[in-house]
Image: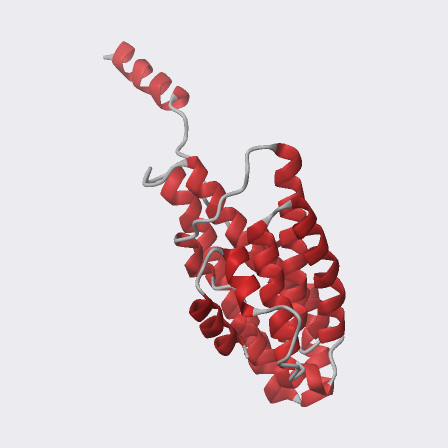
Length: 238
Protein backbone atom coordinates (compact mmCIF):
# COMPACT_ATOMS: atom_id res chain seq x y z
CA UNK A 1 0.00 0.00 0.00
CA UNK A 2 2.86 2.33 0.85
CA UNK A 3 4.47 1.59 -2.51
CA UNK A 4 1.20 2.36 -4.31
CA UNK A 5 0.89 5.64 -2.42
CA UNK A 6 4.46 6.59 -3.23
CA UNK A 7 3.85 5.70 -6.88
CA UNK A 8 0.76 7.89 -7.00
CA UNK A 9 2.71 10.77 -5.50
CA UNK A 10 5.47 10.33 -8.07
CA UNK A 11 2.94 10.31 -10.90
CA UNK A 12 1.29 13.48 -9.62
CA UNK A 13 4.68 15.13 -9.26
CA UNK A 14 5.83 14.19 -12.75
CA UNK A 15 2.57 14.69 -14.67
CA UNK A 16 2.93 17.99 -16.54
CA UNK A 17 0.47 20.72 -15.63
CA UNK A 18 -2.07 21.59 -18.31
CA UNK A 19 -1.12 24.58 -20.49
CA UNK A 20 -2.09 27.89 -18.96
CA UNK A 21 -4.16 30.42 -20.88
CA UNK A 22 -4.52 32.74 -17.88
CA UNK A 23 -4.24 35.93 -19.92
CA UNK A 24 -5.31 39.23 -18.39
CA UNK A 25 -5.18 42.94 -19.23
CA UNK A 26 -1.41 43.01 -18.85
CA UNK A 27 -1.28 41.22 -22.22
CA UNK A 28 -2.42 44.50 -23.76
CA UNK A 29 0.97 45.91 -22.81
CA UNK A 30 1.25 49.64 -23.29
CA UNK A 31 -1.99 49.87 -25.29
CA UNK A 32 -4.25 50.25 -22.24
CA UNK A 33 -3.31 50.37 -18.58
CA UNK A 34 -3.89 52.42 -15.43
CA UNK A 35 -1.49 55.17 -16.55
CA UNK A 36 -3.24 55.61 -19.88
CA UNK A 37 -6.67 55.43 -18.24
CA UNK A 38 -5.71 58.38 -16.02
CA UNK A 39 -4.28 60.35 -18.99
CA UNK A 40 -7.36 59.80 -21.14
CA UNK A 41 -9.67 60.67 -18.25
CA UNK A 42 -7.87 63.96 -17.65
CA UNK A 43 -7.78 64.90 -21.34
CA UNK A 44 -11.39 63.99 -22.10
CA UNK A 45 -12.66 65.68 -18.95
CA UNK A 46 -10.84 68.87 -19.83
CA UNK A 47 -12.02 68.72 -23.45
CA UNK A 48 -15.64 67.60 -23.04
CA UNK A 49 -16.60 67.17 -19.39
CA UNK A 50 -17.03 64.33 -16.92
CA UNK A 51 -19.92 62.59 -18.69
CA UNK A 52 -18.16 62.19 -22.03
CA UNK A 53 -14.92 61.21 -20.30
CA UNK A 54 -16.71 58.46 -18.36
CA UNK A 55 -18.33 57.10 -21.53
CA UNK A 56 -15.01 57.09 -23.38
CA UNK A 57 -13.31 55.23 -20.54
CA UNK A 58 -16.18 52.73 -20.37
CA UNK A 59 -15.84 52.10 -24.10
CA UNK A 60 -12.10 51.53 -23.83
CA UNK A 61 -12.55 49.22 -20.84
CA UNK A 62 -15.20 47.22 -22.72
CA UNK A 63 -12.91 46.85 -25.72
CA UNK A 64 -10.03 45.76 -23.51
CA UNK A 65 -12.22 43.15 -21.79
CA UNK A 66 -13.40 41.77 -25.13
CA UNK A 67 -9.81 41.61 -26.37
CA UNK A 68 -8.67 39.68 -23.29
CA UNK A 69 -11.60 37.24 -23.54
CA UNK A 70 -10.88 36.52 -27.19
CA UNK A 71 -7.12 36.22 -26.57
CA UNK A 72 -7.83 33.68 -23.83
CA UNK A 73 -10.14 31.74 -26.13
CA UNK A 74 -7.61 31.72 -28.96
CA UNK A 75 -5.06 30.16 -26.62
CA UNK A 76 -7.49 27.67 -25.10
CA UNK A 77 -8.81 26.52 -28.48
CA UNK A 78 -5.32 25.25 -29.35
CA UNK A 79 -3.56 24.53 -26.07
CA UNK A 80 -6.48 23.29 -23.92
CA UNK A 81 -9.38 22.14 -26.10
CA UNK A 82 -7.29 21.05 -29.08
CA UNK A 83 -9.85 22.46 -31.53
CA UNK A 84 -7.45 24.36 -33.76
CA UNK A 85 -3.88 24.09 -35.00
CA UNK A 86 -0.88 26.19 -34.00
CA UNK A 87 -1.07 27.84 -37.43
CA UNK A 88 -4.65 29.00 -36.77
CA UNK A 89 -3.61 30.24 -33.33
CA UNK A 90 -0.80 32.20 -34.98
CA UNK A 91 -3.28 33.88 -37.34
CA UNK A 92 -5.76 34.66 -34.56
CA UNK A 93 -3.05 36.18 -32.36
CA UNK A 94 -1.77 38.25 -35.30
CA UNK A 95 -5.29 39.57 -35.83
CA UNK A 96 -5.71 40.35 -32.14
CA UNK A 97 -2.35 42.10 -32.12
CA UNK A 98 -3.64 44.39 -34.85
CA UNK A 99 -6.61 45.33 -32.68
CA UNK A 100 -4.26 45.96 -29.79
CA UNK A 101 -2.15 48.29 -31.95
CA UNK A 102 -5.23 50.21 -33.12
CA UNK A 103 -6.29 50.56 -29.49
CA UNK A 104 -2.85 51.77 -28.45
CA UNK A 105 -2.72 54.45 -31.14
CA UNK A 106 -6.26 55.57 -30.33
CA UNK A 107 -5.38 55.84 -26.63
CA UNK A 108 -2.22 57.80 -27.42
CA UNK A 109 -4.21 60.43 -29.32
CA UNK A 110 -7.05 60.50 -26.79
CA UNK A 111 -4.56 61.13 -24.00
CA UNK A 112 -3.69 64.48 -25.55
CA UNK A 113 -7.03 65.07 -27.25
CA UNK A 114 -8.95 68.30 -27.74
CA UNK A 115 -12.69 68.88 -28.12
CA UNK A 116 -12.68 67.63 -31.73
CA UNK A 117 -10.98 64.39 -30.72
CA UNK A 118 -13.35 63.99 -27.78
CA UNK A 119 -16.30 64.38 -30.12
CA UNK A 120 -15.02 61.56 -32.35
CA UNK A 121 -13.81 59.29 -29.55
CA UNK A 122 -16.82 57.08 -28.91
CA UNK A 123 -17.47 56.40 -32.59
CA UNK A 124 -13.76 55.69 -33.09
CA UNK A 125 -13.76 53.13 -30.28
CA UNK A 126 -16.74 51.43 -31.89
CA UNK A 127 -14.86 51.18 -35.18
CA UNK A 128 -11.80 49.43 -33.72
CA UNK A 129 -11.07 45.95 -35.05
CA UNK A 130 -13.58 43.66 -33.31
CA UNK A 131 -11.64 40.96 -31.41
CA UNK A 132 -14.51 38.51 -31.97
CA UNK A 133 -13.91 38.62 -35.74
CA UNK A 134 -10.43 37.20 -35.22
CA UNK A 135 -12.00 33.72 -34.93
CA UNK A 136 -12.60 33.68 -38.68
CA UNK A 137 -9.47 35.42 -39.92
CA UNK A 138 -8.10 33.87 -43.11
CA UNK A 139 -5.11 35.98 -44.14
CA UNK A 140 -1.78 34.26 -43.58
CA UNK A 141 1.67 35.51 -42.76
CA UNK A 142 4.41 34.00 -44.92
CA UNK A 143 6.82 31.58 -43.30
CA UNK A 144 9.77 33.37 -44.90
CA UNK A 145 11.18 35.47 -42.07
CA UNK A 146 12.35 38.58 -44.02
CA UNK A 147 9.04 38.97 -45.88
CA UNK A 148 7.05 38.18 -42.75
CA UNK A 149 8.85 41.02 -40.99
CA UNK A 150 8.08 43.41 -43.86
CA UNK A 151 4.37 42.53 -43.76
CA UNK A 152 4.20 42.84 -39.97
CA UNK A 153 5.84 46.27 -40.16
CA UNK A 154 3.38 47.27 -42.86
CA UNK A 155 0.44 46.08 -40.78
CA UNK A 156 1.68 48.11 -37.83
CA UNK A 157 1.65 51.22 -40.04
CA UNK A 158 -1.86 50.36 -41.27
CA UNK A 159 -3.13 49.97 -37.73
CA UNK A 160 -1.68 53.30 -36.60
CA UNK A 161 -3.10 55.06 -39.64
CA UNK A 162 -6.51 53.46 -39.10
CA UNK A 163 -6.77 54.77 -35.55
CA UNK A 164 -5.65 58.24 -36.65
CA UNK A 165 -8.23 58.30 -39.44
CA UNK A 166 -10.98 57.26 -37.03
CA UNK A 167 -10.19 60.28 -34.86
CA UNK A 168 -10.04 62.71 -37.77
CA UNK A 169 -6.24 63.05 -37.80
CA UNK A 170 -6.26 62.83 -41.57
CA UNK A 171 -2.93 64.50 -42.36
CA UNK A 172 -1.09 62.24 -39.93
CA UNK A 173 -2.86 59.15 -41.28
CA UNK A 174 -2.10 60.11 -44.88
CA UNK A 175 1.55 60.73 -44.09
CA UNK A 176 1.79 57.13 -42.91
CA UNK A 177 -0.22 55.58 -45.73
CA UNK A 178 1.26 57.21 -48.83
CA UNK A 179 4.79 55.77 -48.41
CA UNK A 180 3.26 52.37 -47.59
CA UNK A 181 1.29 52.38 -50.86
CA UNK A 182 4.55 52.99 -52.73
CA UNK A 183 6.42 50.28 -50.81
CA UNK A 184 3.67 47.66 -51.07
CA UNK A 185 3.43 48.30 -54.82
CA UNK A 186 7.18 47.95 -55.30
CA UNK A 187 7.34 44.72 -53.28
CA UNK A 188 4.27 43.18 -54.90
CA UNK A 189 2.26 42.76 -51.69
CA UNK A 190 -1.40 42.93 -52.81
CA UNK A 191 -3.09 42.46 -49.42
CA UNK A 192 -0.99 45.19 -47.83
CA UNK A 193 -1.54 47.44 -50.85
CA UNK A 194 -5.28 46.86 -50.83
CA UNK A 195 -5.61 47.73 -47.16
CA UNK A 196 -3.48 50.84 -47.62
CA UNK A 197 -5.56 51.98 -50.60
CA UNK A 198 -8.75 51.41 -48.60
CA UNK A 199 -7.50 53.68 -45.81
CA UNK A 200 -6.33 56.23 -48.37
CA UNK A 201 -9.81 56.23 -49.92
CA UNK A 202 -11.47 56.65 -46.51
CA UNK A 203 -9.21 59.61 -45.79
CA UNK A 204 -10.23 61.22 -49.07
CA UNK A 205 -13.91 60.54 -48.40
CA UNK A 206 -13.52 62.09 -44.96
CA UNK A 207 -12.12 65.16 -46.67
CA UNK A 208 -15.03 65.07 -49.13
CA UNK A 209 -12.58 64.56 -51.99
CA UNK A 210 -14.59 62.01 -53.90
CA UNK A 211 -12.56 62.43 -57.08
CA UNK A 212 -9.47 60.86 -55.53
CA UNK A 213 -6.65 59.21 -57.42
CA UNK A 214 -7.14 55.71 -56.06
CA UNK A 215 -10.07 54.14 -57.90
CA UNK A 216 -12.29 51.49 -56.38
CA UNK A 217 -11.20 49.24 -59.25
CA UNK A 218 -7.58 49.44 -58.10
CA UNK A 219 -8.57 48.64 -54.53
CA UNK A 220 -10.71 45.71 -55.66
CA UNK A 221 -7.91 44.30 -57.81
CA UNK A 222 -5.38 44.56 -54.99
CA UNK A 223 -7.67 42.88 -52.45
CA UNK A 224 -9.01 40.28 -54.87
CA UNK A 225 -12.64 41.31 -54.31
CA UNK A 226 -15.28 42.89 -56.53
CA UNK A 227 -15.90 46.61 -56.85
CA UNK A 228 -19.34 46.41 -55.21
CA UNK A 229 -17.76 44.96 -52.07
CA UNK A 230 -15.26 47.83 -51.96
CA UNK A 231 -18.11 50.30 -52.39
CA UNK A 232 -20.07 48.77 -49.50
CA UNK A 233 -17.03 48.85 -47.22
CA UNK A 234 -16.32 52.46 -48.05
CA UNK A 235 -19.93 53.45 -47.42
CA UNK A 236 -19.79 51.76 -44.02
CA UNK A 237 -16.51 53.55 -43.21
CA UNK A 238 -17.66 56.95 -44.44
